[in-house]
Amino acid sequence: MINRPRRLRLNEKIRSLVRETSLQPQDLIYPMFVTEGRGVKQEIAAMPGQYRWSVDLLPAAIREVEEAGVGHIMLFGIPAPEDHDEIGSAAWAPDGIVQRAIAEIKSHSDIFITTDVCLCEYTSHGHCGQLDANGYVDNDKTLELLAKTALSHVEAGADMVAPSDMMDGRVAAIRARLDEAGRVNTPIMSYAVKYASNFYGPFREAANSAPQHGDRKSYQMDYHNGREAELEAALDVAEGADIIMVKPALPYLDVVARLRPQIKQPMAAYCVSGEYAMLQLAVSQGLVQPDIIYESHIAIKRAGADIILTYFAKELAWTLQADELQEVKQ
Ligand code: PBG
Image (cartoon, rainbow, N blue to C red; front, side, top):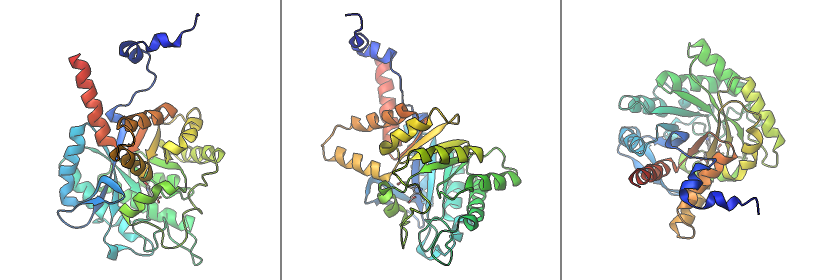
């Protein structure tokens, strides 16, 4: 026999030499939820191990993220119920929940902050933009609101903005507004390929952002479609997106792999709340080994993602640190 692939699997030393994919703490972005109040660290029922933090507790929470070796977070704001309105104006308030959270974090740490730019957490109807008379999300009117929101995050100190609303033309609108304000070096990570997915269920509980009527299918993508992902990604690249994201991740790795050869920009994939909930539950019940978490994230990288947004970021980074220590000791 000439070809014996098992030769390269004989022991860990040879396996690690020929390994094609790796995962490092710097690949990870940890999503965090910030809420009103003081002294609040409230576990999210559908996402055991994930919390809503009040602004005053964020610096300590961020210290834990940094200790794990994670240098990037994604911030989601949950405003007070009385701050919701038809157009989501609390999203761009200079003293809004995200704006205050950024300022507080940055006064203690230089962790890299990306903000989710969307209106669904701020609108009374829970849709990601302004509605017209028929209850349809008005694309072009929403662009202005998103651009304002993105700029207000950047003015508060955000390092990168990530629009997740799925309006057409939002990357161009945000880019133009940031540039006008002299923020030419602030990157945009676009949720370019975002499907209307059932996997966002736990997030909507976490952020109180479920739509009050209908669903998001008139703006988020139909999950029967793969070719359309190429169109969405190409449009966002043309509009100036610096990083292209696919979301969800694990059930959509075909889409990540399909886009990889086409997209020269870095690609991100978001392992979303429903993916987290399923893995976390199966591990906590002892149905599967905890290593399933690492394996799942390796699969996302193998498919072609450079960056992973994941609620497992801290625990993955701890595992990776521990593995490294062991290798040093050997
Ligand atoms: C806001 C937004 C959502 C998620 C990220 N940004 C929810 C949605 O689109 O309904 C989902 C993240 C997750 O499920 O972890 N539009």
